[in-house]
Image 1: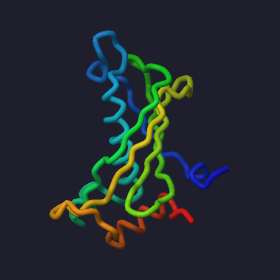
Image 2: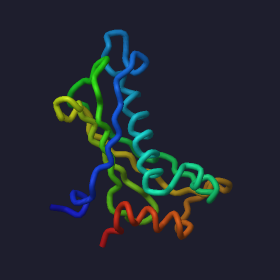
Image 3: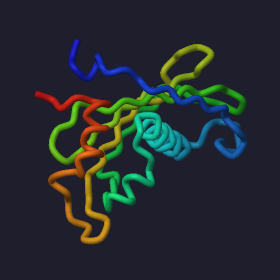
Image 4: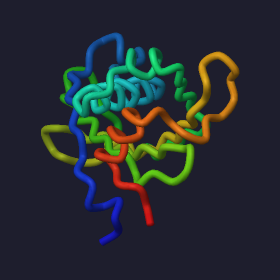
Length: 146
């Protein structure tokens, strides 16, 4: 078992609403990306890091890579379980892994990864070092890889 596999998942539940779907009642593909971000923001907040903390520290986290693998559809009224975890930290990028499941069946519908980079809010330059409180909170979520 790899180090990444030992990191627990954060779970975020969503009921599929009409505005999440296309005309046929199937979840629209962009909705999954929004759910992944909601899970990530909630996971950080549950770990003591609100989005406001990042802004106050002058740190932006733009998405630099995103990948989704569609396995099955979710439909109107389904309960989705968005599972998120942060991979071991390597350098100035953070890789998040997602497993979006049908909560009733626990079948994976979407697998995804999102890579974020740390950027100074004002200069838009990559930050090589985070403020200590942010770094400590992130390391508590996903230990630095060896």
